[in-house]
Length: 378
Image 1 (spheres, rainbow, N blue to C red):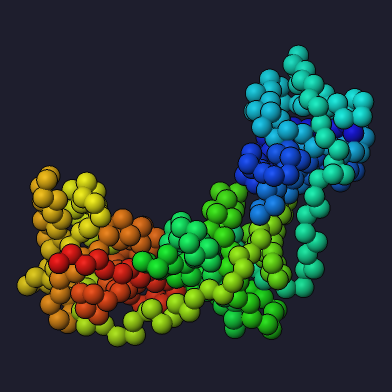
Image 2 (image 1 turned 120 degrees about the vertical axis):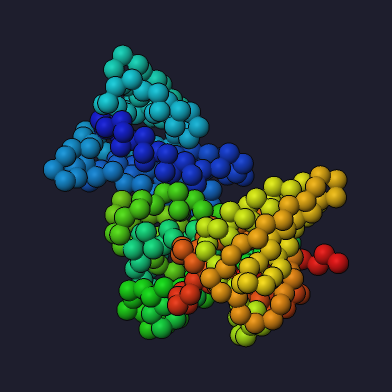
């Protein structure tokens, strides 16, 4: 194997696949990055057996040469050392050669590194996925849908299924739901698909977070393929595989109240900033609780009280407040997370009583919803 490659392309691909490489794996070869050079270009692969990422650099793209492959071949190099070396190489052109058997020489300018490689034949094969269950979604929409739901996954392993985001595909619509049983994020969007069948899978939150870091903000389409135990996200030069979580995701539709007793319309920014200020004192308390009360003249009072530190009260003018008077307590963190996920200048908060879950939506937009369970404070 021998090829000469542009350092910036090499560095970007190596950084991408590094997101899947774990230092804590029971399979030693998975601490490495697999490199395969062919006439078409060079492919880099990283995997921790839950997530696998494959990044391809074609020999040329848009009339510009990225790689010159002098001799085909393959090798696995220790990811930690290889990625650090690549970052610090002095010149734009990098030559990578297998000298004898598994010794790899990396040259750039006057610098030369010798690295011991491993046999690529021993690297686990990536899942072979039949691409007949494909649907497509613009990259920027996919990123938004992940961002608006993944923060609500559970971080506790007591119910592993809740550490993932439930993706349901039915009637040309993708519905993403995440919950940790104290809050819930839901986002849905129409998608391009020829699929007649519906799908219901749970993708680990960790996988979606890593995928989001890799994707660029473009409106190019991402191909998504779902199989029984894997999902594949495919962009022009990137393959991202993730295993799916086993088990049935709970039916969350029962959690979402169908009616409300008190509805508050308020500016997202003003409400978020008031909650943020109230949380300054709440944060010191054991449970980070902020209280909300409706008061006359379409105002809401946001307050927080930590006996050892002090208290804060702030009144926020709403666009309108309808229904019964209300006093409710909730986690400031959960509310801030939910408000940051919503994209809209105005929000509608619908309450069904002081001890019932409440829902935050954007007026006239049923594609996104955030739900939070209140906290008992009496």
